[in-house]
Image 1 (tube, rainbow, N blue to C red):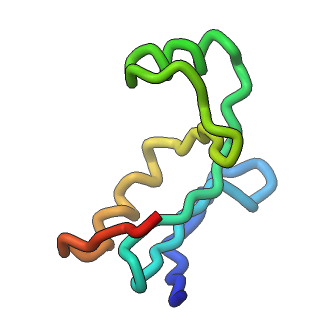
Image 2: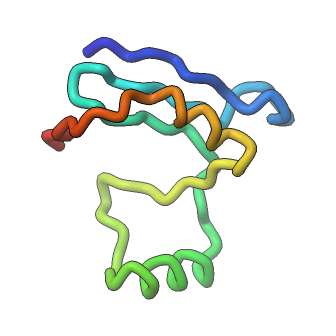
Length: 83
């Protein structure tokens, strides 16, 4: 795995997150963010995605919109994420 750090939120209170990394091996993005814990928000997110649960090995995280420009740095290749 060759992870490339893309950046983190300079406005984070503690300076530690949210953040993005790019894995050039499989084209995936690793995300560190604020864990969404509001049951009403989670229910709405699941309802809009057609799902009824978040798998136990996954989490819903929030990323501020100001970090989305970092994703423009990603290659625009059609890479297959094998996960």
